[in-house]
Image (cartoon, rainbow, N blue to C red; front, side):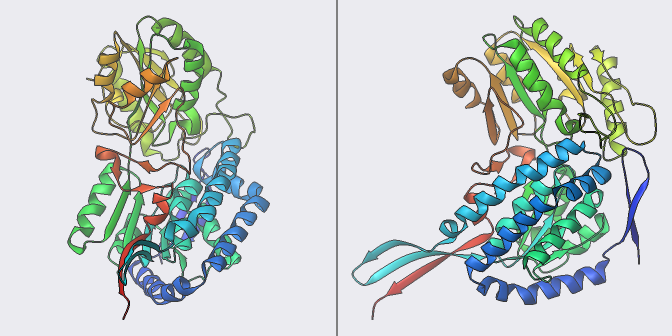
Length: 457
């Protein structure tokens, strides 16, 4: 049987070896999930909710162990690993609080003996191919509402967060979710391809645009419900009336948190020329104050790059920017030692001929471009094939709303960035994907509406 070796990206050391699910084991698990799903759907919602509440309690009780595993296999600084686990709790609370109302039958017409009602039936067997950068957030945005609405879940965590994925499955099993209803699959691309070949009723994927396109092509002929949460090249505009210091400190965090490895990390910054120099000075000072080092240390802010091949992507963007005239203010290089390390990197004098300003970086690197007007900023923000998030820093809410209404993005921010709320839908425009998670709509997305026509005899 093939083996997956899990490595610590901060040291390069092997952490664990896991058996990989091949085509045969994937098919067996999918068949078992198909057989088990009707009984789970028939389980009263209160019992499914109780299981999720026990899962939540276990996350709290085992936070230290779970955070340590996440840090060891992903390279996320330990404080940020704990933040992710703690941040998952309000999402679970939201799903639990709103599941009943979200899927309750609703009467929409009742007259002359004829009633019309809308019900919500579970999709059936849901496949979830998840991401490594926020495995608790991304995985549970699918897993928790899918289970609450009566689906079975075939869950393939990223091979770079497989141990965390197995923890999620273990805790759900211990909480009372049957093993054939919450089914983990371990492996990389071949396991994912085997999963796509199964009889599934929905595919929920988080990852790169290129992989999302391949998944869509593989499933197109079968008309499977498809939801793709893909990348971003997230812009922010710092307007002439903004507080330069506050904006710089906020956006430095938005660009560098989780070592910049987030689909909603700030990846492009446009600053009005009247504030540009003051903003850049404070931004660089903030970035240079972030501690880079041992991810297990509580005060570390910048951790390791999870995937070694991403180092080459960052090198290429740096070289391209320098060759085309950008000014490197800090960083711009790999850091020495074992593991995958990249210095926090800031460029100015950038433009849209540079890969840095067009293609997803997914690392601690940012370009800051000077602009002369609101209209120029909006045009540059929209000059992208992505549309995940965008923000504006200004003292005027009315101005921010007017500008952000013109920007093509699924989530927009006024005087904040890199923020996700369980109460709001998470979706994208263009190559940032299709479908949504979170919000009440993100619960219903795991169901199909059923129309009831009921005539009294």
